[in-house]
Length: 324
Ligand SMILES: O=P(O)(O)O[C@@H]1C[C@H](O)[C@@H](CO)O1
Ligand SMILES: O=c1cc[nH]c(=O)[nH]1
Image 1 (tube, rainbow, N blue to C red):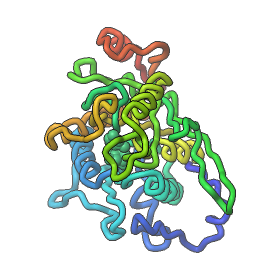
Image 2: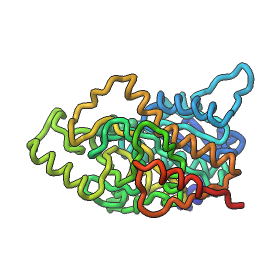
Image 3: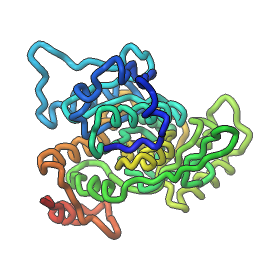
């Protein structure tokens, strides 16, 4: 089961998950969520509703006749959450504090519901560094805007650091789910988690800007040279808090633009909506494969990973096996 590293919770009569509009006293969390295996999160309520409907189709989950999906957290007016069999699909809003609060409450929810070994995914959007809009990017590592591999939070007046670590095995298994027929690239690399969309990501188009275009380009190029493939705003706390709770997690984002070419997100809405389905497809393939293989899924996709080569992926897929 999920281990909470908080002795105080045991002493509380009930635990109110305020931003989810749920509580251990007011709801039977074991009955409601005890069968959950996957927690998928992404920025917007609409994306996570779309994912809930999509995963329902992929895993063949049937709702009771005459019912539709319900936003379980609608009365929080903060996050949206949908449950489709063993899958929870929840929105996290924008940025580090927003996903941080959600992660505290989702991890506690898993604990109260007595869920065993849940797997968390972030299904997001990002700016690519040398990667065109529409490219899917799996995070191998997450760093903050200073290149640190940890999540730093001031607590009681002191900075506390927690390592931001993604689960390597889960990343390998995800890679083995890539469809070589996809008409777009899927790559892996280091994801930079910025605390701001504009100046924090080196854009020239915010309300303020104190650096030149040349300085911006030098910075972005230096990120690329260090293996940074994309910039978004949640990967560090997502990696760090799941790791701290002993939960396997991976982040899959789609690039909305290549930041080496522009700052403005100007792809047509329909195009961006289609792009946002791409990380969903990869995660849904993983979930389906996991459920079909009764939870034992492995991949030997080690070593240099040539995303461009369909032959290599066919090989990796053949190497996937069920371990009983
Ligand atoms: O999952 P989303 O699309 O919200 O991820 C990125 C990072 C920020 O939350 C947001 C900025 O546009 O998009
Ligand atoms: O450039 C981008 C695009 C999406 N999300 C980000 O955080 N940055």
